[in-house]
Length: 315
Image (cartoon, one colour):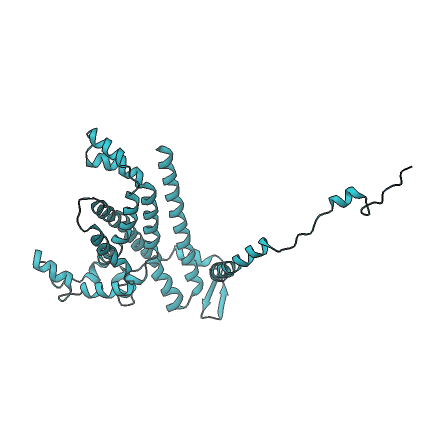
């Protein structure tokens, strides 16, 4: 008889083969985790931990750094009944609407003009229009705050010499939002123009020439050929402008000398958050404002994505 072979394990060779193997974290896996570790640590410190603290503060009423009182959802209920908050939402929404309806068409028009091959010194003009976006917001606020002064301001003097404008017109009291829009146009139109210039490179010239041969006018060529080609970039620029508009703080705060102006005409959501958290000292209420602002931005991003997807499906 053939002698029986000894078992490889306590339950025989089959059980031994089925036993799980221990994997040690070494080689490529260890190298990957070591490379990811700095980013994970920074993400935890500067994103996850602040979000957790903001969520905790949103259900508290704070009186300085140490005195707190748990209030649950009363911060949010008080916020939605706060007239100052709705003034800030209205002002921010008006500014965001002007960014989309005035600033972006101007940026697209400049991009289409400077994309023409028959325009001389195109590179120089692109640099000239883009350069204001390289300037800090503090500088822009100081310059335009001086320009909108009564009597001595450049805006009133230029309008007075051309159309007889009143030299005593107080822009920073009666037309705060118009002043903010003009200042932001100067700074950001060229920045958005660069995005549109890049998008115009995707326009197929053979389709444009075919539309021209078929008798399509400039508006028809723009609507049927140019606009579909630049739609993805245009959607991104719209979303970027809306998010940046809802985060407006430094420009009005500095132009209005650390205030919201008469009757809170320059009050924005982020400015109200700053005043509540750092001037009044109620970080819990300020955190509630921040979370509402975050939800508004998420809603805008989701709405833009749904609209873009609907346009793509329709196309």
